[in-house]
Length: 381
Ligand SMILES: Cc1cc2nc3c(=O)[nH]c(=O)nc-3n(C[C@H](O)[C@H](O)[C@H](O)COP(=O)(O)O)c2cc1C
Image (cartoon, rainbow, N blue to C red; front, side):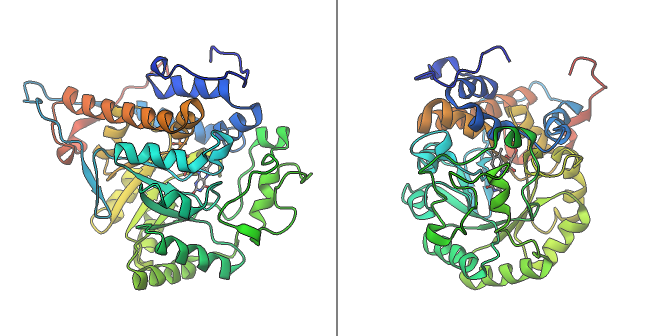
């Protein structure tokens, strides 16, 4: 990382940002140290965080040449919604740390490229304000101890036109991230969890909370008794409302099968961006087992470490319907608000299109496992 972190740069020349990594460097210059550390960090030693990106380097392409690639179709459908390229916005918390318009700016950026935004329960703009942008949207749910509040989140999301409920299943408690502890991370004064209104119990991470990381106090409100029965309950609620349920945070075939039995329409193979269990496998490594088990029954998506178009194509080749990106979108938001989000998503789209041309497969729908071979162990990455 070549740039000093100053956090006080007024604006970024977005034309100088042509990769996800460029946007990360720009975000580093724009954000406070505490916000940057919150976004970038992973659990404990960050081994899983690093593995997510490294796993993409363990596959190489087995491409075809002399194929007519004058027309490329990178589109797909996710739960019935057509997206022009297979990259969705992952749910991430606290977007107003990156931009004053927060999740509303993210939503506008996602809308301008025509993809789906998964809005977090822990958003700093209300789910209704996000919906008012007109973005294609799914709602990510953290089940709260207060089940009345949880039910109201689901009802509000359905009423506001969210087309899926994404239950995060890997976060009974927020993972330990050392930088947050060192920084005694708190939400800045005046920044609120917009979906909650008055429903946050006192001491849960607002300004002035003196606990080691204010975030861990949010966890106290998460329902740690959550189990498969609750997923079944949510799926039955979703069915009556006509809204499918997605389980996010599945890493094994066994759990994927149980999720199908509970009634989900899709799973996201995810380790929460390496922020929960240090020692979880890279998501790309976990993907084939899940696809083998349930790929014939439901849609399988993946997130974690996706930073380039070839990464996207590799995930699709191994059976993912589409991928989600978390941090790159936050980097775009920090670097340039709505326009920055649009740029990050556009560069990924352009790299996917270029990748399909380069591998000689003009239609994303024709990408399959035959396109990949295991890479020889590398000495340089
Ligand atoms: C700063 C940050 C906040 C996150 N907040 C949430 C959240 O509120 N809900 C959730 O389900 N996942 C959350 N995640 C996990 C993401 O949805 C996603 O799984 C992860 O970011 C994908 O990895 P990537 O950042 O390498 O793309 C968060 C991730 C980050 C980096």
